[in-house]
Length: 157
Image: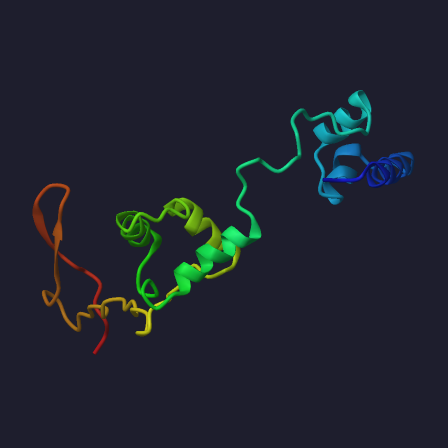
């Protein structure tokens, strides 16, 4: 959101640049705007004319509810589980504090959506490269027409 005062300043700067010989689209691009934005500001004015309320939805989670969810996610019982596993376990106990997507959203907001287990996270290793030191040492399967073809590139010994 750009304030009305900042929009006016931008328009003045672009007008000044145009009087000095600059192209309007290039001046707008330098300020991170599109020419279409400038046209819209000129036609509709500087007021934000978008429809809709900026009020928070009625069903938005309160800070207390978010804290309750975080406490459950951090509890020793669920420390090694993800929300896809936690929600059904809680529902089996007759407890519903939020959906899986809500729990994931809260984890993302708090930057907690990472490895939470007591063990180390799994390490991903790429396979060792295959190196041929002479002809006919490496072969590969060509899935497109079911032929075996030799790999022609080899490393000098």
